[in-house]
Image 1 (tube, rainbow, N blue to C red):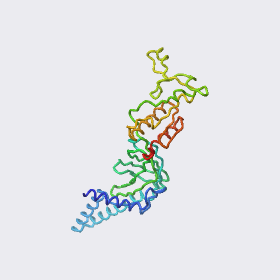
Image 2: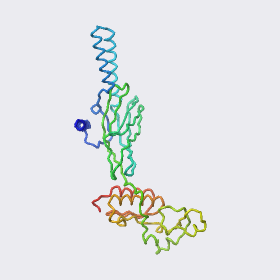
Image 3: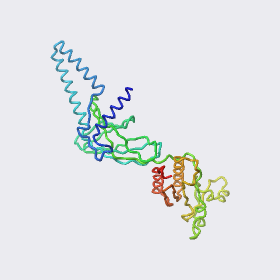
Image 4: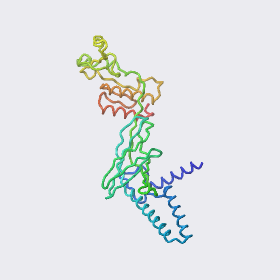
Length: 326
């Protein structure tokens, strides 16, 4: 009960502290109103010790005791100013986030910019319960810092609220702020660990007979890969080598190596997420084999092609696939 109340109070404070409805436009400047200061446990103990020393000096009327207490109190006040100044007016800009597969970690890039002539030391950034990342930023320099977040579901993953804090220089005072940059990461479906063989259709098996190219235009051999069609295995060459590796025939006709990765080719008993996982595995296998492939989804069609751009386009289509489209 107490934990829930504490969580509600914390979230209410965060909503008030952000002052801007997230996500925030760039650049995010940590102005004085956005930086909050409270003593740490060490700071509370320090203050309690000063209180005890002050009582002792008053009880025994010790002039040196008063001097020591006021000296240490002044040191604490200076620490407050330095801790606050170490964080205030820091500029934060969103960077990039490379796509990841569900189950991995999305790395949100942040660019921290120090516009002052003195360094910022021991800044810590973290999201929720994740381990903090500590950075130092020199005068008039910028620092790129990634923050990792578990990517559990496919689709767009917006960067969650993160905390930036510092206790420099003495660890007596904690200054902190919150920010929600306008940055999202694309999360692909998790590729299936085991998937059916690539769905070679009769059209791709025949090649392009009309223009005289395709499976008849033999151009060489290479080592067999899992995604290769069984009909392209060079069985005669394998028989001659006996203990040699399995080889696959290469053809100069583009249609000879094309295949369609079709949503409708999968059994109806497989649910949506399983279908997407199998299609993701097919895309990776076909791309690794250097094959030209096309993708058919409900309301989405990618023409046959190969290369990194085709791979990214196919995985993005799977990541953003809507259940309502099926």
